[in-house]
Length: 516
Image (cartoon, rainbow, N blue to C red; front, side, top):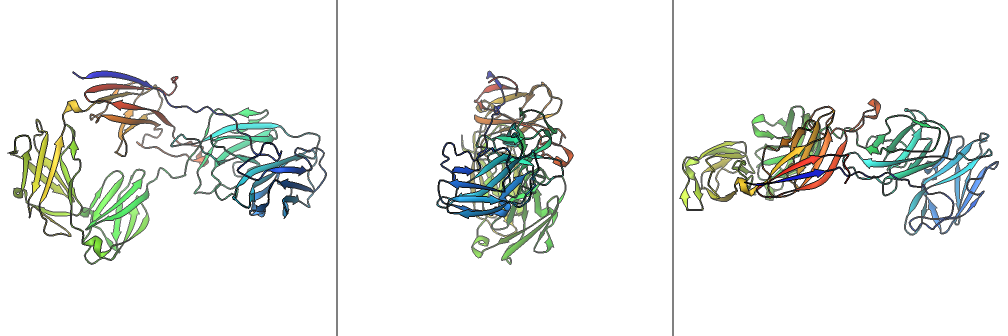
């Protein structure tokens, strides 16, 4: 009888905090960016009537796109920027509104000459008797990894369709950010990685949003982090592709493939019988003796054009027959894969030896499809098997004759593996748990409320990461958000890894609200 072990895991929660934006106060020295040592008129001046600000730095600096990287908020003036030795001069010709707090944002416009360091700075002044003093604190995380995101721009917008923020700042190394000198009002809050520093949210940039409007009548700290995602990240996109000589092409993608996939090779459709599609990748086969390059056109669930060059050396590679798994558990099937499409299989030229007593296994059956050979036999009692494919057992699309393949396979019993039972928390939406070890494909189970679920297969001893997704739309995958529909990305919870031991049963009780 195996051992029974119970684990109760809680999700790792990050505590939100505050991060102050770099200002032109000339305080403690910043060793990573130029430091202002004199500001005229002084920072946070009131009853301001001038039309120029000068800032002297502690070192020689250079300007970086001043027309794009210097902003007035509110946008009542167009700043003109010039540099004289170590002093930056910002001037304007427009008349400013009365009784208004203004911020001049220097969005990486000043860079030191030697190291190229820059920073986000603000100069604040008021044409009235007081400076707006409200603040807003929040944190920025990656929606998928739950890790803090640094250098994300967090902006307050006057309306959902505003292209540029009225107020903005950037997150620090902990993803924390503070927006200061804010005026009372109602704002839309957005966050994004403004990599081109144009203050606009571009399609290729990670982004997130606060679901409800920010009614700012006092300084506020947001307890919920803004979670960044990439639009359409849940849709399938090609992540890698390669030629597997002598005759196989592999294409991998991220996301699910909900529709059929059509493939053309150099303008000709690839027959469906030459294509093997799984959840995350496909393998297709072609004769390559006359090909020097391959243009692969995907249509349907994926739309892309991929180009590969095929060298004579690659096409001359001989085939290799390998087991899907060299060490198999009690529920694993014995199967082999060839890097070419199998045309015929002569089972009379295949033998299976039990290495424990050197006897030949009888009654073993074989079947092949595409590049895979499946084996059907009674595996009970066997520990080590030796499969021998003699010359002539295989013919394939790009290699008519194959030599001898001798392939050992090790089989393990139930006692060599552990059992995992997973229990989720009381949730109004389905929970999708992924149990993963290293680079292997994850085990995925759906959890309903607090009903224990036993993984359908035993697990090899080792440490497994644990992640749970709130599968709101019940499609079996993580989905990103949609700001236009005010749909947030599905929440992801990470738990401490679970250790699996041989001949042990582990019960994993997941609770994101439990104290660690």
